[in-house]
Length: 489
Ligand code: ADP
Ligand code: LRH
Image (cartoon, rainbow, N blue to C red; front, side, top):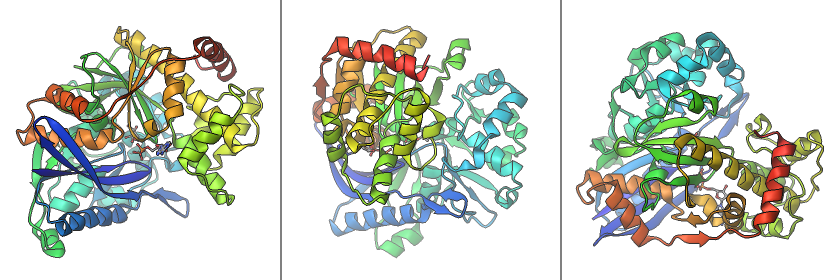
């Protein structure tokens, strides 16, 4: 009984095999590949066909191993999409959410429609790259894509369509568009009209756990494989990651730590009120009637871009090397607000960190260790800030923080997070999204009863590393300086 999870993050994709026996989960990494966006002239786009190629390579690896699959599912980063034309073909490469074509679009639409209308109808935080602003940007630019488009598919919907030939919009990802109304349980036609589009573009929304097709016969013939059922899971990677948090308590705080840091708590229904709007929290849909009351924090993207900048300058560092250098650098020398707009687009991130510090009357040394330390300490301190907001908004006090995702391999960041929040951090599993993808496949296949049984199985199957807070006073003082220097409030 083997299943396959494709988990596509903004920095890398992976195919993992999963097996479940006697309440224990075993995962095996079958294939890992980088996910490299491509700059084409002024546009930043995803190389979607390469991703499809990597999915096919994974299916071939399964075949060569002689493994019979029970089901397959895909999850990926949110908000991005492809448009399908009349003849069923993809129109153009999907834009990357960091493409600058959305610059200024959110601000304009917020003015026209008002925040309380947009947030009240969707419960989704204002982020400049939300799908609604990407589509509005295309509309304003009179994009020929929109003139020809017949179907709107989010990235996993699109790849799933390539694999099965069937088109569905999966719920967890649909909510991240800021065009889905969780109160009516359907696409919000008034918002769709407000950006000048037709609701017909948007298809049937299916819940995580729905069987949405089988590998199409042409693909099976091309690869020489048997048809396999394809399941729609919580196809938003953050939804999948939170489903995999091995919490014992029903009220828990999490940090999904990868390219982005997504921090919040799980709730039974969307929290749409003045405070959540004012704090710009989001209510993303999850599996089995759950919502993620959370906030995006810029995350390890900043470090990924620093690493790329150093690489362009001819100096290559692995993440463990960067962590080591950060550990040797001077503590609390300078702080940035990771969520400053300066850090959103790709570019020379070390220079931007230095620019931010200069602008706020600080100085960061021009060394790899100093810059990495500044970024990681600032992230840990921002986590404290957002955790406190989560407590305020949810009315819960959390005994600690669950961390999942690739970023937990950075043990220094886990320890500094524990230090900053003054509470224990429970780190694991690393492959949260892929495991969350798998448990929905198993629940759909009747192998697990529900998400709580699944969370117990995860807890019993994967190590969780505990980090106790240290150097509390030094971090308390650092937090006060962080707030003062960055103006985070
Ligand atoms: P995404 O799914 O968004 O592509 P991941 O969950 O794979 O991201 O996490 C990627 C991040 O994890 C990297 O940007 C890096 O900061 C961190 N990371 C990965 N491997 C290591 C490692 N060996 N040591 C420290 N940090 C790591
Ligand atoms: C994390 C993530 C996050 C979104 C962003 C676009 O991979 O899905 O939840 O906000 O990518």
